[in-house]
Image 1 (cartoon, rainbow, N blue to C red):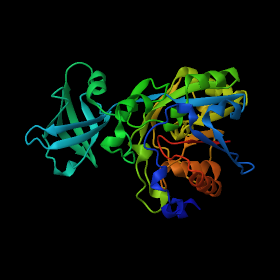
Image 2 (image 1 turned 180 degrees about the vertical axis):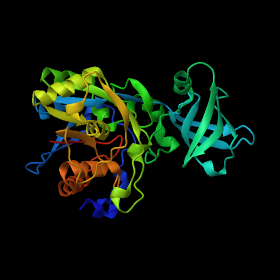
Image 3 (image 1 turned 120 degrees about the horizontal axis):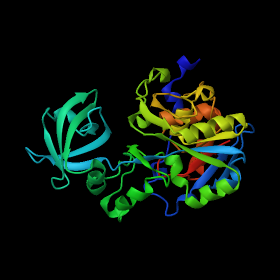
Image 4 (image 1 turned 45 degrees about the vertical axis):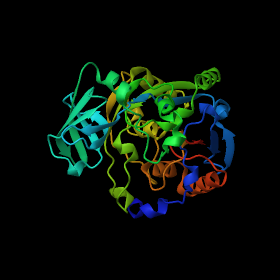
Amino acid sequence: MTDSLKLKDFDFQLPESLIAQKPLNIRDQSKLMVIDRKSGSIKHEIFSRIPHLIPTQSLMVFNNTKVIPSKLNGHQIKNGRPVEILLIRKTSDEAQWESLIKGLKKLRLGTEMVFGNGELKAILTGRHENKAIVKLIYAGSIDNVLSRIGNMPLPPYIRRKANEDNGLSGQDKEKYQTIFASHPGAIAAPTAGLHFTPRIIESLNKKGVDTASLTLHVGIGTFQPIRTEIITEHKMQPEQFYIPEETSKALIKARKDLKKIVGVGSTVTRVLESVELSRLKSSGSSGWTNRFIYPGSKFKVVDHLLTNFHLPKSTLYLLVCAFAGKKLIMEAYREAILKKYRFFSYGDAMLIL
C-alpha cells in the first residue's frame, strides 16, 4: 500500500500571506489548534492554555539543540565577488565543515573566502554530492566567532525587505531559539519548542506533567525537499541525536507507569521512534537517525504530538499525516487556512491528542 503513496497527494494551496515572516512579541500567544484523533474533533485555543490541555501523568520531551548562527556573508579574496555560505556541521577533522554555498558549481577547489572583516577565512577543499567541504581559519573559539559575525540560518521562505526588518534580524538570535536550547549544533530551530516560556514549563510541572530533553541537531535531513514522486523512494539525510541518562530513565519509567509520552516537535518524535524503548539503556543513548515517517508508519513511543504547520509535500507534513491520518490533517489544514493561522517556523502550533 505504501508503495503507491504519491507526493502529489500531499500538496495543498497555501496563501503566501499566511507564511509567518516574524516572531510574535510574546512566544506563548500563538494560536493552538487541538486535534483529537479518536473523535476527529478540531478545536481552537491559545498556546498559553497548553498546561490545561496536556493530560496529567504525561512526560513531555523537548529538543534542547541550539541553533548556531551559521549563515555567513562575505566575499572571495581573489575577485571580491560576494559569497553566501551556510555551515552545516563539522566533519571528523575539526577545522573542516560541510557547508552549502550559493553558486558552488562555479567555484574552484582552493577558492579562498573571507568573512567578518577578515575574522574568519574559508578555503574550499572538497565537494560531497551538492555540499561543499571548507576549511575554516580563525583565532579563538569558532562559537565566539560565529556569534559575532554569523546570522541565524532562517528558512528561505522568510523573506523580509530591508524596510520591514526594523531590527528583526537582531531579534532572531533570541527568538529563533527555544528557551531550553543548550547544545549548539543545529542549522534550524526545533520550531514546536519556540512557543514555550519559563512560566508555561512551571505550570506544566505544577500540574504533574514531567518534562525531559534530548538533543537532535536539526540538519539538512529535516527540511530537505522530497524529489521523488513515489514517497518511499526518498532517503533522509542522517542527523545526530543524544538521549541523556536522566531522559532515558524518565522514558523507561513513563512506559512502566503507563504515562503518556508527548513529543514536542517532529525532531523529538523521529528520535523517539528510532529507538526501542524496551531496549533503551538507562545510561543514555546516542547515534544517528535517518528515520523517515510517512503514512503507514506505526508509532510505538509517542502518544501525543505538538507541532507547527508545515510545508506542503514536506517530510514534516507527511509525519503529521502519519500520526493523525491524512484525511483529518487535510481537514485541519483547510480550517487553519480559513481561520488565518500563521504557518511554518515562526507560525502557530497544533496539538494532536
